[in-house]
Length: 53
Image 1 (cartoon, rainbow, N blue to C red):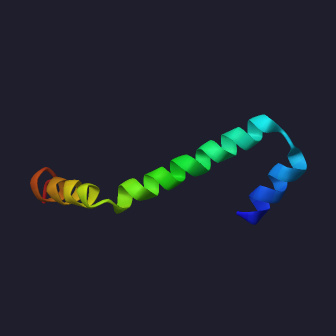
Image 2 (cartoon, one colour):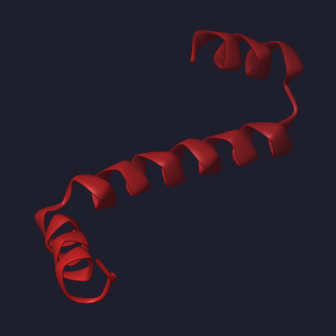
């Protein structure tokens, strides 16, 4: 993370800052989705009902 950050500061390219920020935000969002009870429930439901043995 710190390497990314120092690269951004050195680069000073606003577009790259926006892109990396967006990627990090998406990653954080995805982690929250994966950890949510609802998501766990969906996975369990899929595994038990729709996937062949």
